[in-house]
Amino acid sequence: MKVLHMLTSRLTLVVKSIIIATAIVGSGQAHAAKTIEQKSIILPKSDPDINLGKMNYNVKCATCHGINAAGSAKGPSFLNRVYHPGHHGDAAFINAPKQGAKAHHWTFGDMPPVEGITDGQIAKIITYIRALQKANGIF
Image 1 (cartoon, one colour):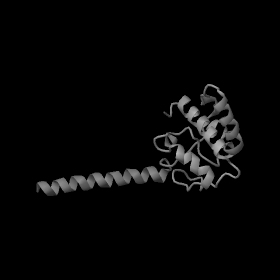
Image 2: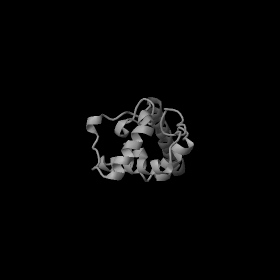
Image 3: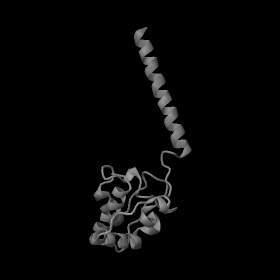
Image 4: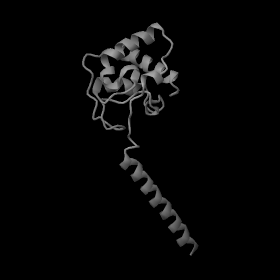
């Protein structure tokens, strides 16, 4: 009897978890991406590397990922905890513009490679994005 009660309790917990997860995914909350209002974004202190990163970001990334990484209808904001360095390390930011990236967090579709981007530009863009993230409490 004790074993049956324990199994029933565990099964109930699993079923409840599945129902909650289904409700979250079904409502779009699990993968909801939104743009961030520009006025709420804290800009990092300027320095030459950050400024160069911002200039390169504006040319190569902002069309999809928004000014100041705020996101757009074409791509997510990088000011989201999903892009914390512990989850999306710098290697992800190096590989995505070079090779493209399969959609895995959002519903924007796959990211194509960025034409003509150089390793030097990517390094500066990462410096800028990480400075923005730090200024906005992502890490």
